[in-house]
Image 1: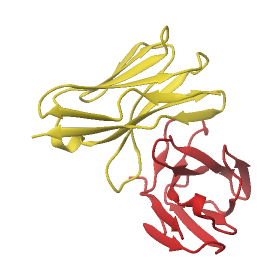
Image 2: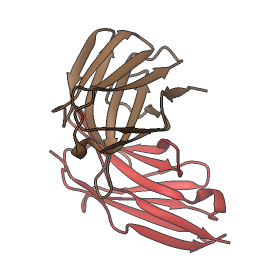
Image 3: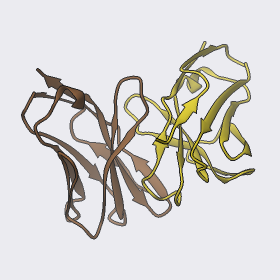
Image 4: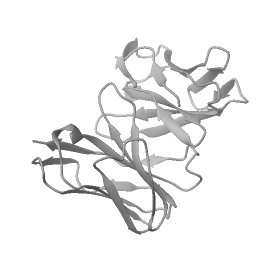
Length: 110
Length: 114
C-alpha cells in the first residue's frame, strides 16, 4: 500500500510571500503525484501533477518538486494571494490506487 | 467546464435510515467515484464505476452500495445509516483511466447521522 502525509496541518504566510507545502509518501513504487486545492465549501480542484520520471514541473505561479530519494514532494506557490487560502493535499498513485494526504490548511495574511 | 453536482450539500439522517446520495456529471465521463473525507484522514475511496452498471469496491465499501444505471449518474446508498458514517462525501468523475489525474470533484455532501 501507500501512506501519504503532509508535514504541517496549518501554514500562515504574508500576502506576496512564497508558500511551500510539503508531502511525504512511503512507497517507492509510487509513480504519479497530484496536488489538489480545496476551498471552503467546495470539492478538491486539480492544481498540478508530476510523474516520477521528472524532478520538477512548473505551472502558473506553482511549482512541484519531487525528490524520489527521500520520497518527498513539495508545492511552491509564488507571490501568494488571498485567493490561495485553502486546504492543499497531495495524492500518490501506486499500482492501480490513488492515496490521498490529509491536507495543509494555508492562510494568507493580507 | 466540467460540472459534477451532488444532490444535497447538507443532510441529516437518523440511525437505521436508508440514505441516497446522488451525483451527476455533464461531461460524458466514463469513470465515477465516491469518496469520504474525514478530519485527519485523506480521501478514502468507497466505490468507483468505470462504465454503466459496472462497479468496483474501493478501500472502505462496507456499509455502502452504489448504482450506475446511466452514464451521467452515480448513486451512493447507505442501506442502514450508522453514526460512524457521519462524514463529508465527495463524488468525482474522470474521462481517462481511473489512474489519471483528471479527476473532477463535486462540492460534497456533509452527512450527519444522529
